[in-house]
Length: 171
Image 1: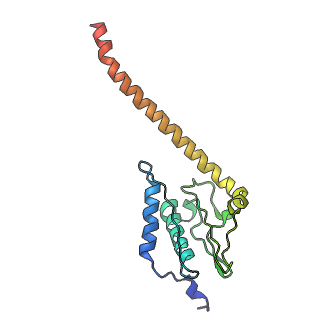
Image 2 (image 1 turned 135 degrees about the horizontal axis):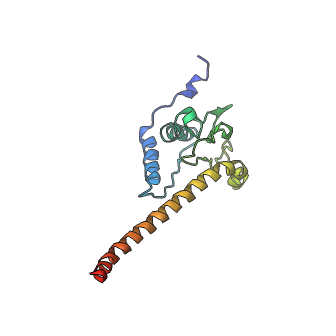
Image 3 (image 1 turned 90 degrees about the horizontal axis):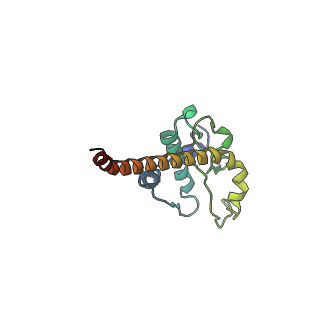
């Protein structure tokens, strides 16, 4: 056992994790989708990033699919002494559909350890763009299917109203 093995332990924070899962359920329901903003706020070192990692792990294994079955890598991991808030994009399996977009950002803290700059999204856009395109295509396809379904419903409703009139004309 190495001297840093304790860093892999996650002290269950089921209440916090369940709040994140509930927010996910609200935004992922296509019939009743609601916008959600979730911010994890606490002093440095109290486990915000670790909770985010556990939530990503749940999403990437329960929603996305385990290992080769999913788009996203299953774990976020760490680099040196820092827990990562984003997956290694080279580990994404683009042959699979992307079920959600994950991109974590850290807010600035007084110690500058997890500093967030205002142009963080702009800086990462070239990296994220290849991952966003399939997601946007899938969203456009879903919107087209929904429009076709609505048009078919309207046509059927209109056609049903016209049937008795046509029947009366021929009798």
